[in-house]
Length: 408
Image (tube, rainbow, N blue to C red; front, side, top):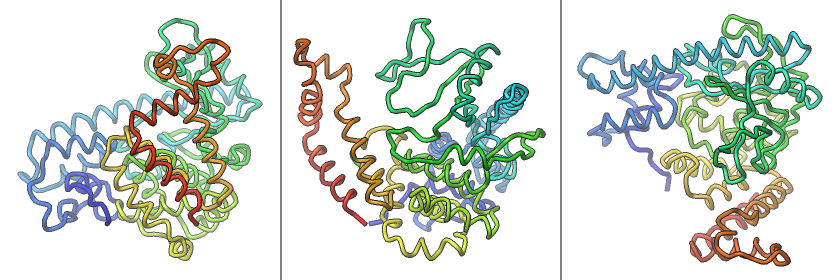
């Protein structure tokens, strides 16, 4: 059975549609009456779509939308717009700093996507500053930013903030080669690898960096990814997060709506080489299903051929209705396996999942204190703890993983 999004979520998505935003209220099914306007605001915030929701609802006939709803959305939009302008200026400054010192750094997501995927880049909720650099330039870029006033951001292995001042590289296992640096106002994420190693998807970052080119972004010529690489990256990034936030699908919808035919052949070729064509097809399908984009003709044969896209899109609908990154770990693990078209990639991802599942945490050590010579048994303690806490879900998870791993 196809999950049905709540009417408030459908309204927020319709307001952000690339083709029918002006008729947002008309996109609701006949039975979707009694809209909770407070929930509309909550869902717009939940999916990082406050700007597009405000812009569309503000154009509705007077009295259609309660004044307090418009006021809440307006306040959020102008706050994000102000943040966007400050972030854009810092992106330009940091990019120019690195370029002056001979470091090639490509801007990821943020304004680089916002100016292409949205009519107005300030409609996209701003985040951090993400930059892709080569392995050879990584240490130099890090040193430059630290000398510029940024400080390394440290978390403990359990994901909590490190309260002391012993700054260093982020100590989260399986994040891939990356580094976060912060000031009181901004966070820069330097990437050599775009996707965490725990996800098990290779992205050919050196090739992506070599294909990056200059484009006018926020009134400056900045290095950005090749359009095909950008779309592939966004789809893999969305799949990693199970597409649980509407903004990521809307980003893809905006790029699809503005893409040209030759781009799609390049996207298909690049994604096929990397083994992530299913992730790209799913992203484009979701863009059509939820945000009114039209699937490009060159992608339709592959989309029709892959029978997993429909079931996967239904899983995404469930993630969209839940809180992002909360709960349903078993369902997410199965999704991460099923979203890959190559069996060898599913097996590699499964090995990563097993390794992470048996990685000892402070809670495992708190459950029982083992002597030094028996500390190798902590993975067994972890398995017992997780199994006893939620045995039915653990059994269902095992079957989901087996089915996802063996599926076509």
